[in-house]
Amino acid sequence: MGRVRKPHGLKGHVTVELLTDRPDAVFASGMRVLVGNTEGDILPQQPELIVESSSYFKEGMVVKFDKINDRNTSELWRHRYLLIPINELPEPEDGEVFLHELIGMTVNDPDESSIGEIVETYELPQGVAIEVKLKDDSTVLVPFIDEYILSADRHSRIVVVETATGIFE
Image 1 (tube, one colour):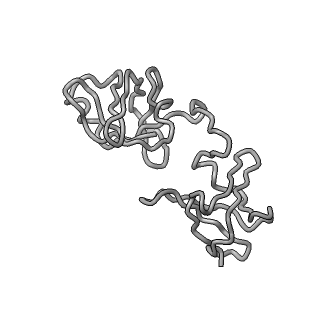
Image 2 (spheres, helix red, strand yellow):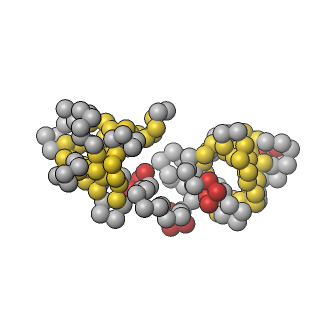
């Protein structure tokens, strides 16, 4: 959900780089946060943290956690990834999917004909891209933006892509 960047002030606040599009829900007062790595694995013997307060700051948030009470302690949390259990995530809105749900989804063209399956996702500086394995076993990298993605349905596990852009040729 985020990555601790650095301490902020002397009382244990930290700046957090946001890795979620719902920071108000994830970093709301009372929310439980776990420490993990980029693959989503929880790091052993790391305490769970409870959000005491949060506010937007520059391109992220300043967050105060219950177990981080001074600058020296907050310095130890630098570059740690913050996770929440999947069952505690707020449900995505219609037409939205979690990034981890994309793997294995069927990719259809606008006429609803299957053209492949999503085999990988990539978080690039330009945004998220999906790797689609086509029926001939070749793969195509598709930016996950409105120009290419017409719809994504997490319940039917189907992503409809715009094929008229020429990306599949």
